[in-house]
Length: 253
Figure 1 (tube, rainbow, N blue to C red):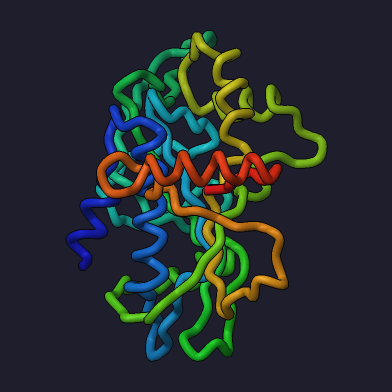
Figure 2: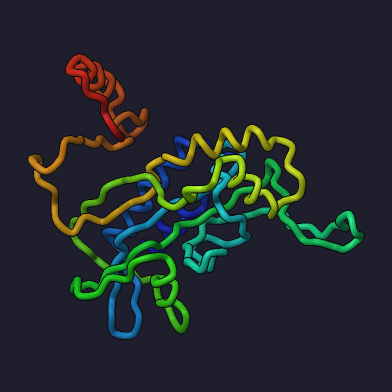
């Protein structure tokens, strides 16, 4: 099972957004249902996770640059903990305007990097919840073990990621701040647009401890696999979508 997870976590420079999002779905399902974190005698299950990945075809610029093998842990700039995808980006030392050598990343078409931010963990018996990236990171200060663990049937929902922009930040200001980690990027305006395109993507997966009854929701979600040409039923999806549109409903997947 761990080998399969490692394969799924090995994304590359050429994957398109559809394939990247398909990987997110497969990995989330596997982490929720088949893996846990052991700390001493306590087993913690994944409760809330967020996905981040950048390459030339999936320019989610909010993603922190890093170099890593898949399944390595990474403490990000804000003190949270990530489970890394395979990541590769050049880092060079160049002289700045004052003649001082400064190391920065090079954001070119060969770069690909990202990981899964751990937002919440819950103990197996449900008695303890580690809430927030910093609280989750504290768990890894001494010793951590990712282990295979049969968690049974698990439900989860997808939501947009949170805290990508503060109330006082503009998209342009946020992206300009991010790009300080890189040498001069020529496509700055395009990255503003890319940020806006990705900011509301539902890349946050939240474990449902109890199944939600129909009466408690007005949303129906369909798996993105339903329209997949290889594993799904795209013709059925098209017919279903037409029916929903006639009833003035919009499918979410």
